[in-house]
Amino acid sequence: MSNTAIKAASLDEIELDPAPIRPEWILDGAPVARCRQWSDSSDGTTSAMVWDCTAGRFRWYFGGDEIVHIIEGEVIVSGDGAPERTLRPGDAALFRAGTWATWHVPRYVRKHAICRDSLPAAITLPLKVTKKAARFANRLLDRFGHRIPGYASGEHLTFALVGAIVL
Image (cartoon, rainbow, N blue to C red; front, side, top):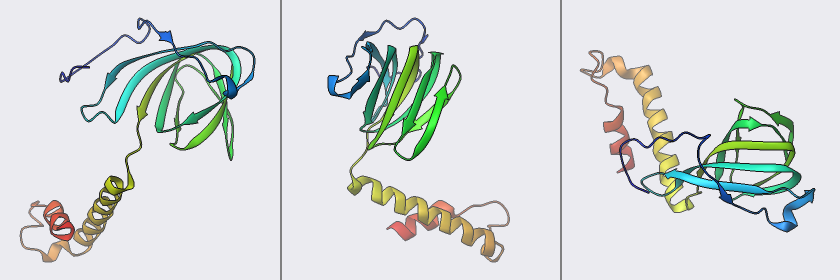
């Protein structure tokens, strides 16, 4: 995939390739799935794809976070500890990494999906710490910013403070 500034697609016109559902995941029927990736992020952790499936019921494991937007048809989804939900055109849902969901496709469903691979804890922990430090710095600035020269005039120091905390 090229790294152009903007990549656009007509999701209805993307031709899909066979993407069989693992036989041991199928609970009922003979669902036939197809898929095509049409874009990915510069760092390779996130991809955009179109997927469709015929009638059937199956379990699905999400190895990474996946946001789906239903384009056509409908699917009834449920997950461990989550109530059953019918998704129709215009509906969106997030399926978290490391979870299972049951998909019941009554007739047909076509979705657009944004899939993000999970990153190792060695990478995500520093990101979480940095975000938490930024929120803390913002709370401090909101509370005590009036005492910092230049802050009241709009010269925000949040990133400088976070940089100092992280370094």
